[in-house]
Image (cartoon, rainbow, N blue to C red):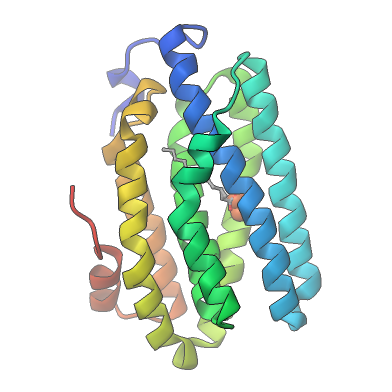
Length: 230
Ligand code: Y39
Ligand code: FE
Ligand code: FE
Ligand code: FE
């Protein structure tokens, strides 16, 4: 997808760019903050992986600080209220699953869905970012692949007992991602990030993850298109 050639030169200081950035930057900051919290919670539950999960939580905290610096660098104030609302449904579903002891659902929400969302957004952002934000985001996206890998490995090792819960959790949560993407598509386009490219990257990464965990390719197709209405 010739995303770069297609987009006109971006003016990082224009009001339109900064306005869109105030929401996308806030989403990323809020996402990293919630990811930090989610991994701290998972560390309580998965005591065998406690140290590793605490490490992942610390990385998310570093990511948040990096993205806060990206906003400051452009003199943008992130709209945190918008971002909290943006994540509310996924956040509530994580909390409900947590309260019911459904660790498989929690892992699907954070380590598969949210990490894949982050990976696709960061990959698509890197070529169109300002120099400061590009360097930060390049460092962050490497970590996000490690986070996704954690979820894949655990779910693969527990596939037989996790499978039915994964399917239900996917049905409940994947449609939210497509809604969320639609909600920010216009702002993302102002930053030079095309919706088609985001969807494509998400589908590839998510589908690969499901395949690695143990789903057949037919199941992967069915699961990853769940709730997708473009
Ligand atoms: O694991 C993580 O670090 C994920 C929390 C970060 C969330 C990133 C959410 C990105 C959505 C951006 C949408 C832009 C089109
Ligand atoms: Fe992160
Ligand atoms: Fe992460
Ligand atoms: Fe992350």
